View 1 (cartoon, rainbow, N blue to C red):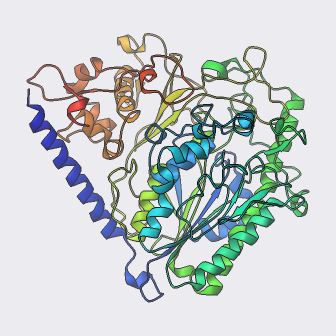
View 2: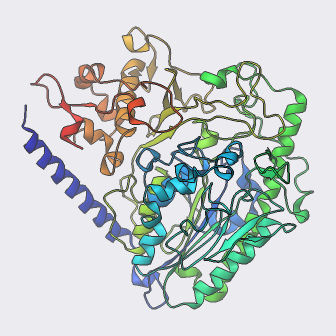
View 3: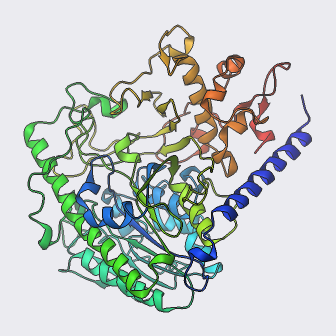
Length: 615
């Protein structure tokens, strides 16, 4: 066996080469001065982040301006995923470029986060603000170490309006103020999701209530004001606009007790309230199926009755109507950029913090699951050098977006990024990854009027904790997950795009199952997926981007087909398996099971090399 010192030097050399390649990709794909018409100044960036917008339920078909300005004038990233299907952890991952297991902002229940209204009491009535949401973000040191701070250091003016994080409240907005912005106007809890009773807080001013005004109209005014300010300055700018649409409306049911809240359908603007009267949730095969699907609490959901279905169709129409203000916002941003002469030198990025389900797998409205509806989200990028009307099939996730913005801005990549820059069109042969790591801890719950999870489930699920992997290649399209309770899911989305037929069964790894996946024994495919998930669930930095190289440091295995060579069968049979020590509501390493995979050496030696030699 090689010595630890040699292995460590080899690993450091690999990291150096990987980072050098990243810098090289940045140089290749950075817009040239000819792409930047304003005297060669660095490009501007406008980032529009919606809240809970689906891709799979066809919401974009009801947004003509977004399609006109972003899809037809830019690139649609068809295989883009979130890494955690819930507000705060997804947003923190997005703005830091790190997975939730590396931010430890999981935001599901105290002390790990406070994303949902059920937990308002914890930060309204107690002093435990340091334990979740925005306070946890601050506690982890990210207020001085996230995208706007880095962009300011690179010479950008930075602006933000709308929702930043949950648990960013009327009581803690100044403890401390959010760092990194030349101008900001944030929505604040507990009024963030009140469409007709919002509260905003500008720069270092005290909060202002906009009760009686429609929140999207208030946001649009603030966004256009910042855009006007940004376009008249001499420096390049970054502007993030984060509307709450189409998130559920949340209002207090009591004037004296703000913890008494209800999540109901979003409220559209008056001018949009009568649109799309015939629209219904798409009746795909997984919509309210006759047979239960999924595992754990999802498999115990009752089939919805007609009254429930009718309400969920109404909920769906309300979401489409609420999104019309976002569509107007997109049109207004494009018009103002064009009028100011900055459109041709501005990248516009459009996405959502997570997806959404309504009725699929018998689920009531909500998110937090690993199904396609929850983790696959819209992503459009328009800007200098971006192909017009193009579709990019490469796999990407939210942890890739900040590295992409660094690339756009000409900033060298950081070693602590868990993602890698997207192919933004200037280099068609850029190598993309095949995988997305998905992770979740804690709560599962329903939104809307029918918020019961049925007689066989509690009202709130506390062990909705799982690790998952999405893997897409030329011949394969797979989802694999391991739950804290020991359940497993394996879906072949080539043959089962609605994830109704779980291929995992007890004893599948014994080798007695004669089924195949894309021409390989299903047990052998599953062993590789489990090993890859073992690496990704605790990866950091470059190991998140090149996880196969952790298992095969010689570099001869780069993807799933490479790993399926029969010479590796014994190695994967003997590999440590993904399993939890216990269910927890947040990321506790001692509950996460094995953290260190064995490393493949060669065919002449026995045994593996431990992970701690490499990371």
